[in-house]
Length: 320
Image 1 (cartoon, rainbow, N blue to C red):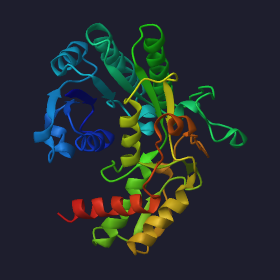
Image 2: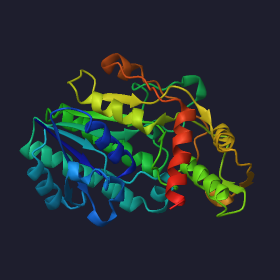
Image 3: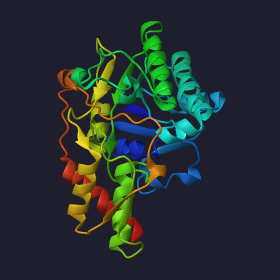
Image 4: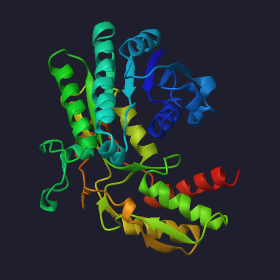
């Protein structure tokens, strides 16, 4: 039996990862949550998990939780993942994403050095890239341009040090944009879907408020992303860094248009200055060639299916 620990198991990605792992044989799944009272995303599978409460910013509680789980594998997902919040509160972002992650890595190094750890970095660490240099692969230099991406770049480098100096099997996943059912409305795709469903249910006018629709992002369905994560801890690799991405760019205006078309709800699009970011990367495309070569992974869920599932998620939630 393999003991698998997911930090942030009740988060958007964490609960999808837990569901993916539950389909595998001989796996005992543990999870760390910051507050049991706010872990509704895993309510329907809680009886199949062993959940521990700990804030990764608390070194002793984090070490104690990891010690109780005795993990063979850790998927470290806990952290601050929202770029505007990082701009608003960089201190908390750095504390959680760097110091909190250091607590996890130190606990593993001290007590479970044979445990494999997947550390979630971000495609944001590459910064603003010349379109002529895309798609971006793992050899591209790190050049973060926001507090969020800077915190992820630091975590990325920390994990590399634990791999090279301490011999820890730390694998770094540089995840590009992902979306899917259950994502917070703080993120654009989910916000669009929620506003459309609210209009459909008569909860608001048929107006949708948006930020910058001209930027283009490399989107992958979260359910494909977690499949990649699972595959990355199947074995040890010569290279410890992998992009997780689709390899194609989607304009936000096209994503919005597809959501409106699928829903069948005509919407008036209203530009909202408050939804624009101070620094916004106009284009990002990654290469997942190394990931495919190592694990055989390719994304399998079409974007239109992802968007339909997000609309269905909000309809079920808002219709209650």
